[in-house]
Structure formats: structure tokens, C-alpha cells
Image (cartoon, rainbow, N blue to C red; front, side, top):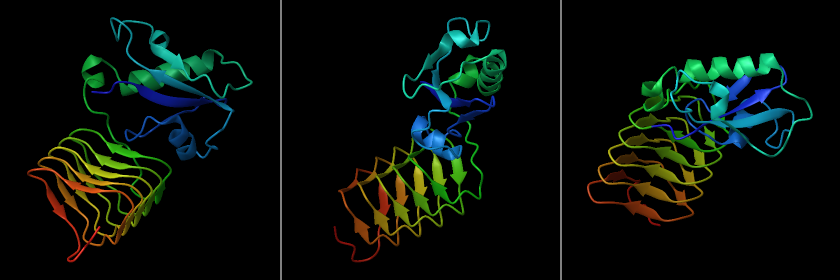
Length: 210
């Protein structure tokens, strides 16, 4: 289930979201090619208002208070928001389902955290660097064959499968939940703790010591 949907709106009327992997406005701005402290775009969160979808889409919006753009939204901006929301969440069934992941396969860097939603399957063959946590939620499958560095935690939640065959450095914790499969055969350095809970399968290089 999605508890909120984060996105930004540019003056040109374009809407950008986290591609199903993040709700961080900072990351969304970076993915859109804007600065992380960009003040030219509006940042919003949305939740379905009562009686969705037979209600006003804009009544479910909450605007991020900082930074505030200097331009005022017009009808075309509001229309762009409505098109985006109704395309993503046409009814409550869509809202209550895991987000659809729509990430270009050729993406090489991710400027924040990656949160793979419950039950999703994702492979990003060109991704080499993540500037935040990598988290595979319950029942999901994430494969990042070229990833070498994670600036955060690596977490495989219950029943998930997380495969990172080239990863050598983690600037945080490594965490395998109950029933999860976490494969890290090239890992050489972990700045935090390494945890493997009952029923987890954690693969590390032979002789790895923390």
C-alpha cells in the first residue's frame, strides 16, 4: 500500500515522481535534473481524498513548504497534476496496491535511497552507485549486477531476494530479515553492522570478517 505519493511540478507543467522507488523530494529533483535545493519547482505529497476517485484530486494535496517557487500555478499546472494522479491511481485498488516501478534500465547512478515495493521485481543492469539505502521490501526481488558502492544501508526484508554480485563497499549496515536472501559475494568493507535473522540466507565472501 502506498501511504503517500510524492512528486514535483515544474513551471513548464511537467510532473516528476520517484519512479516507484522513492518518496524523497530531494531525490526526485535530482532524478529530474534539478538541484536538490531547487526553488523553481513545487513539491507535493498526495493521498486519496474521501470518495476517491469521485472527488476533487486537488483536495488530497499537501504542499511542501520549502523552498517556495516565485511563480504561481495556473490552470494548466493543476490539470497536469490531475492527469498524473489519475493515471497513477485511477481507483482505490491502484492506491492499495504496491507502486508500479518504472525506472530506465540504462540508469547508472541513483541520487538517493532505493526502496523496492512489496512484491516487485526489478533488475537495473547499468546501475553502479546508490547515494542512500538499498531496501528490498517483503516479497520483492532486486538484482543490481553492476552496483559497486552503496552510501547507506543494504536491507533485505522478509521473504525478499536482493542480489548484488559486484558490491564491495557499504557505508552503513547490512541487514537480512527472516526468510530473506541477500547475496554479496564481492563485499570487502562494511562501515556498520552485519545482521542475519533466523531463516535468512546471507552470502558473503569466504573469510569475510567485520
